[in-house]
Length: 236
Ligand SMILES: *Cc1c(COP(=O)(O)O)cnc(C)c1O
Picture 1 (cartoon, rainbow, N blue to C red):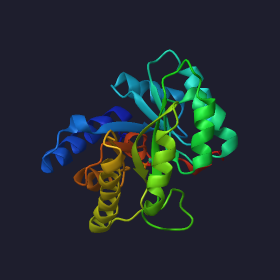
Picture 2 (cartoon, rainbow, N blue to C red):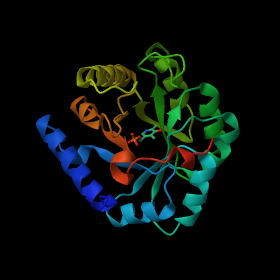
Picture 3 (cartoon, rainbow, N blue to C red):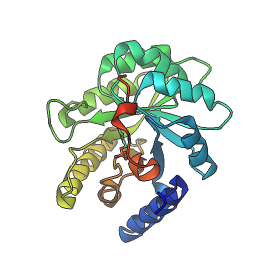
Picture 4 (cartoon, rainbow, N blue to C red):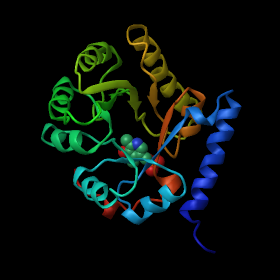
Protein backbone atom coordinates (compact mmCIF):
# COMPACT_ATOMS: atom_id res chain seq x y z
CA UNK A 1 0.00 0.00 0.00
CA UNK A 2 1.44 3.37 -0.90
CA UNK A 3 1.52 6.10 1.71
CA UNK A 4 -0.94 8.94 1.05
CA UNK A 5 0.60 11.92 -0.70
CA UNK A 6 0.49 15.33 0.97
CA UNK A 7 -1.71 16.50 -1.90
CA UNK A 8 -4.26 13.79 -1.04
CA UNK A 9 -4.00 14.88 2.58
CA UNK A 10 -4.71 18.49 1.61
CA UNK A 11 -7.69 17.47 -0.52
CA UNK A 12 -9.11 15.43 2.37
CA UNK A 13 -8.41 18.18 4.87
CA UNK A 14 -10.11 20.84 2.76
CA UNK A 15 -13.14 18.57 2.48
CA UNK A 16 -13.25 18.07 6.27
CA UNK A 17 -12.93 21.83 6.83
CA UNK A 18 -15.79 22.50 4.41
CA UNK A 19 -18.01 19.85 6.01
CA UNK A 20 -17.43 21.12 9.56
CA UNK A 21 -18.06 24.66 8.43
CA UNK A 22 -21.34 23.70 6.75
CA UNK A 23 -22.43 21.72 9.77
CA UNK A 24 -22.17 24.87 11.87
CA UNK A 25 -23.69 27.29 9.32
CA UNK A 26 -20.32 28.74 8.46
CA UNK A 27 -18.44 29.13 5.17
CA UNK A 28 -14.97 27.63 4.84
CA UNK A 29 -13.73 30.88 3.31
CA UNK A 30 -13.86 32.37 6.85
CA UNK A 31 -11.37 29.79 8.09
CA UNK A 32 -7.75 30.32 7.13
CA UNK A 33 -5.61 27.23 6.90
CA UNK A 34 -2.08 27.71 8.22
CA UNK A 35 0.13 24.76 7.28
CA UNK A 36 2.47 24.04 10.18
CA UNK A 37 5.74 23.16 8.46
CA UNK A 38 8.08 22.80 11.45
CA UNK A 39 10.58 19.96 10.90
CA UNK A 40 9.51 19.64 7.22
CA UNK A 41 11.92 20.16 4.35
CA UNK A 42 11.43 23.12 2.02
CA UNK A 43 10.24 20.83 -0.82
CA UNK A 44 7.19 19.89 1.25
CA UNK A 45 6.39 23.58 1.52
CA UNK A 46 6.86 24.08 -2.24
CA UNK A 47 4.47 21.21 -2.92
CA UNK A 48 1.88 22.52 -0.48
CA UNK A 49 2.16 25.97 -2.05
CA UNK A 50 1.74 24.47 -5.54
CA UNK A 51 -1.45 22.98 -4.14
CA UNK A 52 -2.75 26.39 -3.13
CA UNK A 53 -1.49 26.94 0.43
CA UNK A 54 0.19 30.27 1.19
CA UNK A 55 0.30 30.52 4.98
CA UNK A 56 2.94 28.53 6.86
CA UNK A 57 3.60 28.25 10.59
CA UNK A 58 7.00 27.62 12.15
CA UNK A 59 8.09 27.12 15.78
CA UNK A 60 11.86 27.04 15.63
CA UNK A 61 13.57 30.25 14.59
CA UNK A 62 16.80 29.00 13.00
CA UNK A 63 15.01 26.30 11.06
CA UNK A 64 12.39 28.79 9.91
CA UNK A 65 14.90 31.40 8.78
CA UNK A 66 16.67 29.02 6.42
CA UNK A 67 13.36 27.99 4.87
CA UNK A 68 12.15 31.59 4.56
CA UNK A 69 15.36 32.44 2.73
CA UNK A 70 15.28 29.37 0.49
CA UNK A 71 11.63 29.99 -0.43
CA UNK A 72 11.88 33.74 -0.95
CA UNK A 73 10.85 33.27 -4.60
CA UNK A 74 7.33 32.29 -3.44
CA UNK A 75 4.69 34.72 -2.08
CA UNK A 76 4.38 32.97 1.27
CA UNK A 77 3.02 34.35 4.54
CA UNK A 78 5.01 33.18 7.56
CA UNK A 79 3.53 32.80 11.06
CA UNK A 80 5.74 32.41 14.10
CA UNK A 81 3.80 30.09 16.44
CA UNK A 82 6.42 28.84 18.89
CA UNK A 83 7.58 30.01 22.31
CA UNK A 84 9.32 33.35 21.93
CA UNK A 85 12.28 34.49 24.00
CA UNK A 86 13.53 38.09 24.04
CA UNK A 87 16.72 37.30 22.18
CA UNK A 88 14.71 35.95 19.21
CA UNK A 89 12.47 38.99 18.81
CA UNK A 90 14.63 40.91 16.34
CA UNK A 91 14.84 38.13 13.75
CA UNK A 92 11.18 37.26 14.18
CA UNK A 93 10.16 40.92 13.70
CA UNK A 94 12.30 41.14 10.57
CA UNK A 95 11.26 37.92 8.82
CA UNK A 96 7.70 36.98 9.75
CA UNK A 97 4.35 38.55 8.88
CA UNK A 98 2.51 37.11 11.87
CA UNK A 99 3.46 36.28 15.46
CA UNK A 100 0.79 34.22 17.20
CA UNK A 101 2.57 33.50 20.47
CA UNK A 102 2.89 36.89 22.15
CA UNK A 103 2.36 36.43 25.88
CA UNK A 104 4.29 39.23 27.60
CA UNK A 105 4.50 43.01 27.38
CA UNK A 106 8.27 42.87 27.13
CA UNK A 107 8.12 40.64 24.04
CA UNK A 108 5.50 42.89 22.43
CA UNK A 109 7.63 46.00 23.01
CA UNK A 110 10.70 44.38 21.54
CA UNK A 111 8.84 43.12 18.47
CA UNK A 112 7.54 46.66 17.96
CA UNK A 113 11.00 48.18 18.34
CA UNK A 114 12.60 45.73 15.90
CA UNK A 115 9.89 45.70 13.25
CA UNK A 116 11.53 47.47 10.28
CA UNK A 117 9.79 50.73 9.41
CA UNK A 118 9.53 49.85 5.71
CA UNK A 119 7.45 46.75 6.45
CA UNK A 120 3.73 46.71 7.28
CA UNK A 121 2.97 46.24 10.99
CA UNK A 122 3.51 42.77 12.38
CA UNK A 123 0.18 40.93 12.75
CA UNK A 124 -0.09 39.72 16.32
CA UNK A 125 -2.17 37.26 18.31
CA UNK A 126 -2.00 36.97 22.07
CA UNK A 127 -1.51 33.38 23.15
CA UNK A 128 -4.03 32.59 25.86
CA UNK A 129 -3.65 29.77 28.36
CA UNK A 130 -7.09 28.19 28.58
CA UNK A 131 -6.26 24.92 30.20
CA UNK A 132 -4.63 26.71 33.11
CA UNK A 133 -1.60 24.44 33.32
CA UNK A 134 1.40 26.20 34.80
CA UNK A 135 3.70 24.55 32.25
CA UNK A 136 1.89 25.89 29.19
CA UNK A 137 2.74 29.27 27.75
CA UNK A 138 0.11 31.92 27.28
CA UNK A 139 -1.55 34.53 29.45
CA UNK A 140 -4.47 33.89 31.75
CA UNK A 141 -7.77 35.23 30.48
CA UNK A 142 -7.84 37.75 33.34
CA UNK A 143 -4.57 39.28 32.11
CA UNK A 144 -5.74 39.73 28.52
CA UNK A 145 -7.04 43.33 28.66
CA UNK A 146 -3.78 44.72 30.03
CA UNK A 147 -1.62 43.03 27.38
CA UNK A 148 -4.10 43.89 24.62
CA UNK A 149 -4.01 47.60 25.56
CA UNK A 150 -0.25 47.60 25.49
CA UNK A 151 -0.07 45.92 22.07
CA UNK A 152 -2.75 48.21 20.68
CA UNK A 153 -0.58 51.19 21.63
CA UNK A 154 2.43 49.94 19.66
CA UNK A 155 2.48 51.37 16.11
CA UNK A 156 4.47 48.58 14.45
CA UNK A 157 2.14 45.86 15.75
CA UNK A 158 -1.46 45.17 14.74
CA UNK A 159 -3.38 43.18 17.29
CA UNK A 160 -5.59 40.67 15.43
CA UNK A 161 -6.91 38.34 18.12
CA UNK A 162 -6.16 35.28 20.21
CA UNK A 163 -4.31 32.01 19.75
CA UNK A 164 -4.75 28.99 22.00
CA UNK A 165 -3.39 25.46 22.33
CA UNK A 166 -5.72 23.68 24.78
CA UNK A 167 -4.52 20.49 26.47
CA UNK A 168 -4.72 17.62 23.97
CA UNK A 169 -7.72 15.35 24.48
CA UNK A 170 -9.83 13.06 22.30
CA UNK A 171 -12.96 14.08 24.18
CA UNK A 172 -14.94 16.25 21.78
CA UNK A 173 -16.93 17.86 24.59
CA UNK A 174 -13.76 18.87 26.43
CA UNK A 175 -12.28 20.21 23.17
CA UNK A 176 -15.35 22.34 22.54
CA UNK A 177 -15.45 23.63 26.09
CA UNK A 178 -11.85 24.86 25.89
CA UNK A 179 -12.38 26.52 22.49
CA UNK A 180 -15.62 28.05 23.71
CA UNK A 181 -13.80 29.79 26.55
CA UNK A 182 -11.32 31.28 24.04
CA UNK A 183 -14.19 32.48 21.85
CA UNK A 184 -15.86 34.11 24.87
CA UNK A 185 -12.56 35.76 25.83
CA UNK A 186 -12.32 37.26 22.33
CA UNK A 187 -15.96 38.40 22.43
CA UNK A 188 -15.22 40.16 25.69
CA UNK A 189 -12.05 41.77 24.36
CA UNK A 190 -13.94 42.95 21.26
CA UNK A 191 -16.07 45.22 23.46
CA UNK A 192 -12.92 47.30 23.84
CA UNK A 193 -11.22 46.38 20.53
CA UNK A 194 -13.99 45.78 17.96
CA UNK A 195 -11.47 45.42 15.14
CA UNK A 196 -10.19 42.08 16.42
CA UNK A 197 -11.04 39.37 13.88
CA UNK A 198 -8.85 36.35 14.57
CA UNK A 199 -9.39 33.23 16.66
CA UNK A 200 -6.43 30.98 15.93
CA UNK A 201 -7.43 27.64 17.35
CA UNK A 202 -7.55 24.05 16.15
CA UNK A 203 -4.79 21.60 15.21
CA UNK A 204 -4.91 18.22 13.42
CA UNK A 205 -6.59 16.46 16.35
CA UNK A 206 -9.20 19.05 17.25
CA UNK A 207 -9.85 21.47 14.38
CA UNK A 208 -13.43 20.29 13.87
CA UNK A 209 -14.33 21.24 17.45
CA UNK A 210 -12.49 24.55 16.95
CA UNK A 211 -14.50 25.31 13.79
CA UNK A 212 -17.69 24.48 15.69
CA UNK A 213 -16.67 27.13 18.25
CA UNK A 214 -15.91 29.86 15.73
CA UNK A 215 -12.23 29.41 14.86
CA UNK A 216 -11.08 31.66 12.00
CA UNK A 217 -7.60 30.18 11.67
CA UNK A 218 -6.56 26.56 12.07
CA UNK A 219 -2.92 25.47 12.36
CA UNK A 220 -2.44 22.06 10.80
CA UNK A 221 0.79 20.05 10.56
CA UNK A 222 0.29 16.28 10.84
CA UNK A 223 -2.92 16.11 8.80
CA UNK A 224 -1.08 17.73 5.86
CA UNK A 225 2.48 16.43 6.05
CA UNK A 226 2.10 13.20 8.05
CA UNK A 227 3.54 12.36 11.48
CA UNK A 228 6.59 14.37 12.56
CA UNK A 229 9.84 12.60 13.31
CA UNK A 230 10.76 13.73 16.84
CA UNK A 231 14.45 13.50 15.85
CA UNK A 232 13.83 16.21 13.29
CA UNK A 233 12.93 18.76 15.93
CA UNK A 234 15.51 21.21 17.08
CA UNK A 235 15.47 23.35 20.14
CA UNK A 236 14.45 26.93 19.44
C1 LIG B 1 2.96 21.83 16.00
C2 LIG B 1 1.91 22.85 16.18
C3 LIG B 1 0.71 22.79 15.45
C4 LIG B 1 0.34 21.67 14.49
O1 LIG B 1 0.07 20.49 15.18
P1 LIG B 1 -0.51 19.19 14.41
O2 LIG B 1 -1.09 18.39 15.49
O3 LIG B 1 0.65 18.54 13.73
O4 LIG B 1 -1.52 19.66 13.42
C5 LIG B 1 -0.20 23.83 15.63
N1 LIG B 1 0.05 24.86 16.47
C6 LIG B 1 1.19 24.95 17.18
C7 LIG B 1 1.40 26.11 18.08
C8 LIG B 1 2.14 23.94 17.07
O5 LIG B 1 3.26 24.03 17.82
